[in-house]
Length: 251
Ligand code: NAD
Image (cartoon, rainbow, N blue to C red; front, top):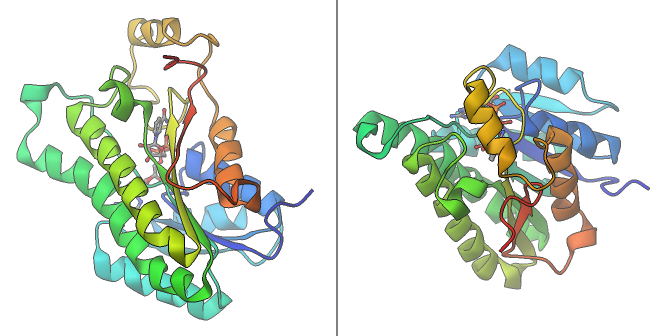
């Protein structure tokens, strides 16, 4: 069954080959969507788009912290496709800092990519989605927002991802009457390049110890949840935060 037949999706930060954005792009494409892969590097984004199953995909350079860049690239995609049904705000960075180590530039970098970027990209698609009275926005938060870190990112990362939860719910409330939905995914520990090579064996063992399912998640585990939230299977779901964490936060 093709859940996204005839639909189009923009996914930010989706060039990272083992990342959550790329896995989501692949699954969306398998379900019939045309996908626009946005990232910082043009060649990497184009390569990722060319690697997707099916045809009609596109790519673009977009630093999500740059409002003008977000507006321009979204306008270009709408001009090309005539419609954007889904936005996945996936671009994100993290830094393993302790509270007192966070310098102003660390705060700016992490808050800007994760939170400001989610706002700017959403603002870029919302007028179009409102006018069509349909659309699904999926935001990548993190278990770090819910439990105050404890995996890899520092307190500024937890704060940025918690900010995304608030923004997701506020957008859901404001956009619901216009037929546009907004939901967040809270992944737990997923093996991607965001932590690759940066965890000691001891840190990894400690993280795995706290996961009832006893394994790290995969990018496909998160993509499946994004597909649900993007498709009409979740037509009556908005303002929700969905845990994809192997049971790490059962309470
Ligand atoms: P990743 O590092 O593999 O990919 C992130 C991508 O974002 C990269 O391609 C990078 O180039 C891009 N990016 C960085 N800054 C950008 C900017 N300013 N504008 C546009 N693109 C930018 O990371 P991932 O593990 O695939 O994570 C994807 C999302 O999921 C992130 O928001 C991350 O915080 C979140 N997340 C990941 C995990 C995990 O365990 N991997 C857990 C919880 C949440």
